[in-house]
Length: 387
Image (cartoon, rainbow, N blue to C red):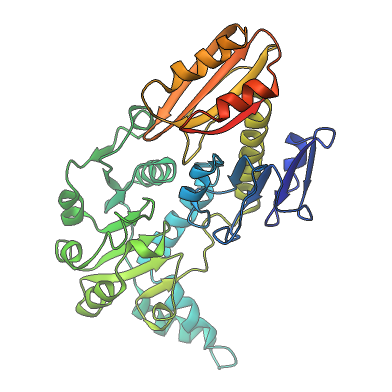
């Protein structure tokens, strides 16, 4: 019986993929559970036990999980990229239109007419102050062409916008999904100089924090509208305020407002609603549960943020999985140890990702605790598991 602790409220659809005959999934389990499913809970203060082998984040961002610490302990961290992409895409397109047409300001003003005489006449008289432009024919710059960025780009093309995409790390597989009408910018400056709207869809890390700052704002069109449904730290706040005060940035739409932004008239603040739809939450839960089950039952790793991808089909043989450092002769030492105990390797897979590697062995016979202990004792081996 595998134990998986829920650290947040998760859609009950997970129980369809983690059946109770084999999985005890609950928020009331101890912290030495084999796995954790999490949404927003902060895991940085947790002391993971040797029993823990996997954490699944029901969402794309993993800032709330101590990735380096998990890697050192041989804990596979999964996320669910693309599961909430449609929900975010719809909100980005809706917010872009709302900002362009001044809908939030118009809405607030209309409510002030409550109780006054001749509301219809007052509406006609006052509506001119909220005139805004259409998005058709305008240029949208999409920074980051992952699952969400591509969906936003394609949706914008479908409503008649010119789309420029920028992503120096765009994969071939992702490229196949992009509309033929999206122009790929070779340099960020090309996008900044041409876009009427700019939307961010890149992860936040040490390299991307403050991605948009004074130098980037200076290259943009006057009156540009910026949308940030990725992470708040991607935009340097002081530079943004200067750009808004000067008229360089007409509006800033963010799903990650801070206290200062709530007071600025040019900020459209949304309380982190990007993936807050029943559909997105269910999609994320399903993907997280499937990935966890595949790893527990077969050793397959897909959509991990800290381990190499390794897809291995189910097997009737004894399977041993080894997470280890990506060092010379590691596989040789592992296979020599297996041979020492007279065990035949029927099949093997080895994948690496930077400094970490993952080896899967299919053996014709059961392996003893003594043998697995000797494998675990090899310098550089982090975690050994028998399935």
